[in-house]
Image (cartoon, rainbow, N blue to C red; front, side):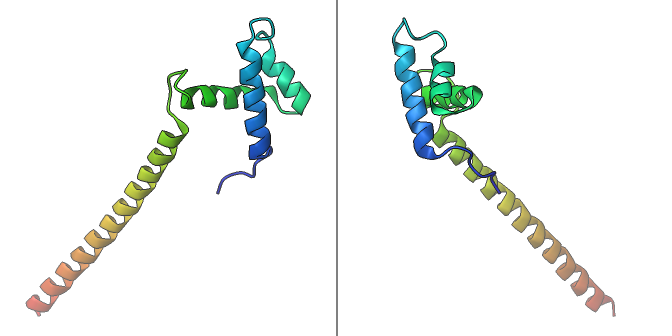
Length: 106
């Protein structure tokens, strides 16, 4: 289960947008994330991560997009379920084969 969110999605989007806008202006680019974080009461590292992810999602920076990360997690979950089902089927087939052999021996 995921940890509860400390900041709302709206605050996250607003802070990210403000930081990205502040970084576009060369005069206010330096320290923009810290300044915006302080204004909105957000931890600077949280905002820095949000900005980094927004840049990745926007294609400005290389990395795994949010959509790709969600799809990857989905596929990993599906693989775990399939492996579990496969183990159950193997166990069932082995016990059926053992029971059949046991009947033939008697």
